[in-house]
Amino acid sequence: MPDVLSTLLTPLTHAVAAVLAAAHHLATALGLGPSSAGGWLLAVALLVVAVRTVLLPVTVHGVRSAHARAHAAPQLRELRRRYAGSRDLEQLTAMRAEQRRIHAEHGVSAWGLAPVLLQLPLFYALYRVVSDLAAGHSVGALDAGLVASASAASVAGLHLTGHLGTTFGASVPGGLLLAAVALGAALLSLLTQRWFVLPMTDPTDLPEAMATVQRLMPWVGGLGVLAAAAFVPAGLVVYWFVNNAWTFAQQGLVWRFAPTPGSPAALRRATTT
Image (cartoon, rainbow, N blue to C red; front, side):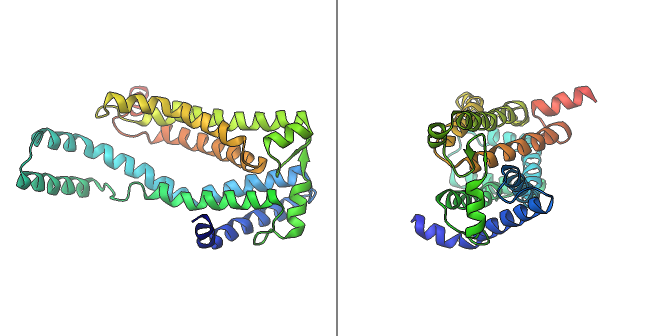
């Protein structure tokens, strides 16, 4: 199955490789050495900018969908109250028809999870590209010369193609640097969830068990990044750090200027304006 998935996503993997190669060429055009750590770090940062810019319409769709669901929530809550305990097929059919009408009225998309699902192939392609670089394999526009250049780039003994265990074995400063980058990526994930995502969630209709799970999710996400960082190439950890920094800033802007209606963030904004 992994081989089939890899084959299906080969065009996307090659597209990501082409963007990374172009970003590296731009970094060298700016005067950074082809095998310098600075050149490859800038290339990874530019890759994040390119990917997140492409995903901006998905982000906007997600914000609009959240607002639509929030505006529909009071009517849906009343609808559930009216039909609570009903087992009659005719009444249940009527309830579903009314639910569809409310969704249509407020523009609630039936494809609410589509934006998240669309990102999964892209993340897989990113993982394949960095993994191939770490293994010394050419992929798409990243030819043998660029692969050798990426393998040679290092900061304090930290190579972008290295792993945490091997890096610590070869260079303690490099291992500590990679651990610090992983910790930064995990912290950014945690703070994004706690400061910006949770406050934009309306807890009104959430069962207590689900609310407890939501409160734990920031910690689960942060610890997940730390755990994964022990097994993936350093280049991917760097990508996570820059990507999480982008997400932190992006969610901060949404929290400040377009919070979900009815959420604690929206109430805070209403009392301060």
